[in-house]
Image 1 (cartoon, rainbow, N blue to C red):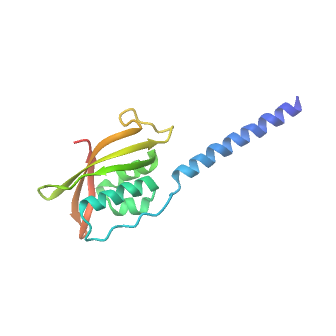
Image 2 (image 1 turned 180 degrees about the horizontal axis):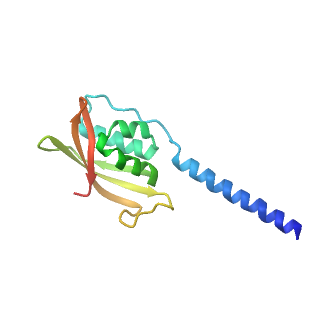
Image 3 (image 1 turned 90 degrees about the vertical axis):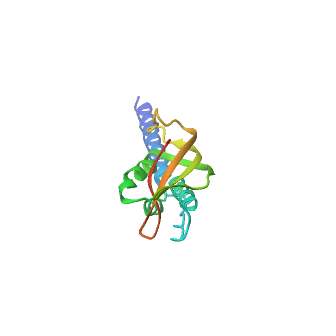
Length: 143
């Protein structure tokens, strides 16, 4: 009886350690993405932003977001395990802003899967504005 309890305790500890290791692996930056120079075009900024989200490089992702968009950026960083950029289209001017259409493959944590944004391929749009002498992501969505 005592031996069975010890085996169960060791198994429980191993399961908790594995879950903690998985969580740590998923939220720790995988690699650093350089912030593009201020002269970079909107499509280059979007590509770097998405690579930063994929890498969980919060410093770069936030540096490429407007202050008002940082909550959305933090949501992507906490809810996803990655996003592989498949296509970034040419920027389309829209008054004082620019729209950039993208296609990406989304991967999410099993504990944060969102019914409105399932893992897999998605078409998306980023809205960029010129702030602080560079293009920054201000908004995003499907339209």
